[in-house]
Length: 400
Figure 1 (tube, rainbow, N blue to C red):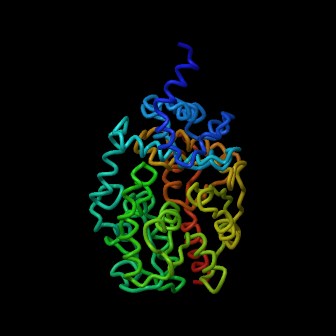
Figure 2 (tube, helix red, strand yellow):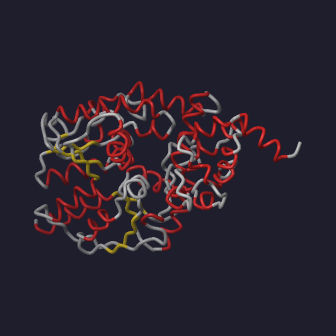
Figure 3 (cartoon, rainbow, N blue to C red):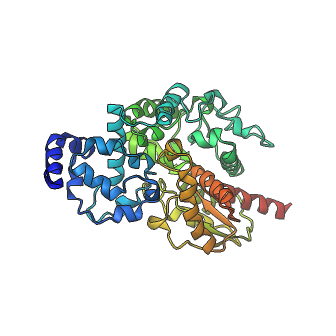
């Protein structure tokens, strides 16, 4: 039997597989151009390239596809999807493959199963006691009123997210954010232990059917404190609230802003003075904030407000920015892959001769910082909120 006949036989037998992965039928448009494979930041670590995977899906090769590691190594950066000449929802198809794998219990990494159970049991990705969500604030010289003991009612709610709440390497992000808001006299509140994971890690892991519980709960908490605006330093939380939550719960009447948008408006008006930061920086566009949410200008406009700061763009920026490697729960599936992806991005960072690589995502900071450490790259990763707080403190020092 020739390979062509074998392929057609399998396709006839498993045609329902293609429908499950791609219910809108867009994968049938694939012309095997290879753009997705050339674009994918983790293709080097996959057993089948994305292009090969889509052909196998088209042919209905269910067992071969589900036993592949390819879709578990997808960072969901959406680079392939925005560049696909046939406008195929490739990132969504990767997530669908995870859903099919979970539904069939075929080749699901043990760590991924545990990951879902951890979030379900603890309402966060780290498995810590959720009452400790404010632990990052404990070494602040002065804890703002919006943190602990927090205001019970406020029109501005700062939704912090799991990574910044429980991973010490990025505690400085919420620390900077709350201090900036306090200095700007923003009456804000946080949810503390009443905040749950946004659910986005479940969505991209193929457990999207569990997101509704988190969406309804978190929006309910926001309404309970009287929030008219929810602000995020985490692009994944921002994306979840803006793009996933409306499928499950009414979010009308609540304005959603990433910190770069919120702080830009705040500081362009009558906000606190900004002091000089005489540094050369480059900016890394987070995938969840840039390609997925379309926020490119706000971070750059915010940096332009800081005196003395020189921004040097990387060769790949905005919609063409390379992924840092920290997305898609890949760290759970294969802990070594993110640093390898970060190494590629750091080559572009080095080419700018910047001292700092600034991002607007706690996971990007973690991944780029670890990539720099492992690859012995002399550059520091910094979040945009930290840069703003540094500028404010410089202004205070100058006026003292």
